Image 1 (cartoon, rainbow, N blue to C red):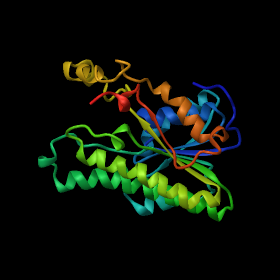
Image 2 (cartoon, rainbow, N blue to C red):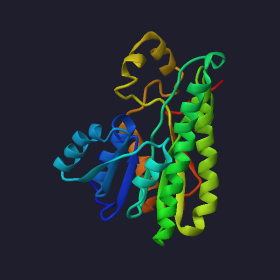
Image 3 (spheres, rainbow, N blue to C red):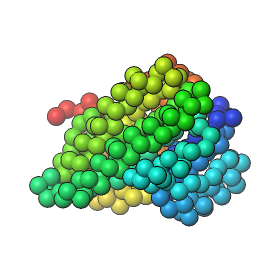
Image 4 (tube, rainbow, N blue to C red):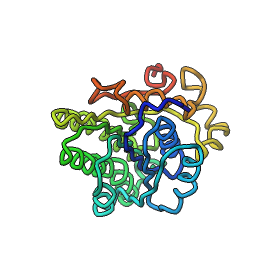
Length: 250
């Protein structure tokens, strides 16, 4: 975790911050000096994380946010404009495309793509009304750039996020708003640790050129590049952090 205070005086929000990558991103931004708002559907799940960040000397608060609900998004972004937005909330459905229901398809696309747009739009509106720029980091996936079996809805939504990132970057550059995509590969988290310890999971790991999973901390460099002025001339970019998975042979 970074101990630099290069984000001192900045306000950041992280969606999907109740666990996994979202919670990790919130910790990293807070350690860098940002005042971080942790956002998720169930605000009560965020209280322990807020206490932890504040106990470590950071500044944090929590807000209830459902990215599938336009009113919820509007309420979360109705106050002072954020400087940094980590657009991370997402879900997935694992199963053959032939057996994917309309409900499951819609839930993934509504959360992982339309929800990302809602958050980015609300954040950018607040930034432009305040006459300030900012950085929006959309958390996509290498599955937005390359496909895997049994994840049609997720891959489609993440591909949409990558293209959306470029489109918004083009439109909002004139307002000083940078929009970039961070595309993680297989990253070890509490949710997937048991799977990757299984035989099927080990086979997947062997397809990664580095022959290992990534650790959440290995996303920190890319996150900070996009969130800080170190990436001030970057917009519309996609950064893959995947151990070489995208360039592995077919």
